[in-house]
Length: 124
Image 1 (cartoon, rainbow, N blue to C red):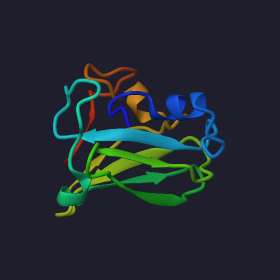
Image 2: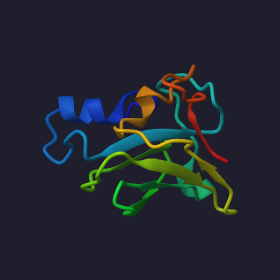
Image 3: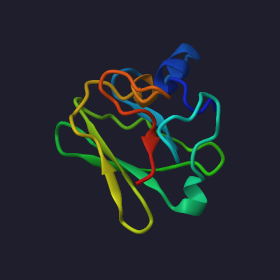
Image 4: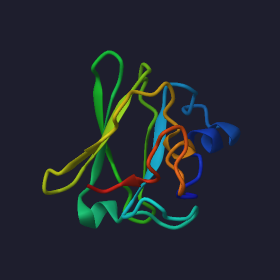
């Protein structure tokens, strides 16, 4: 799946009924902040990395990071705004500073960063 590109917009464009904006989240976790689009992210399986997303009601979903692409996603019925954090196998955490009103993570977490994001979503 196109690591680094807009996950939610692509799934919606492809007409997948279970991917409705704005109740879903998706993105890619990388080893560095400046990785290019379509480059695979971290090996979530081997690195045992996961992403935790907490919605406006305090509901938290833990999302595994895919081994082949570094992608993660959820079509849970989340209530926005949401905050997210990446958790490593050793328990290190890299957490978002502020909540956001959409879950299309790669639209802000680009190779150069947008909307105040420092760049890619990165393993702590």
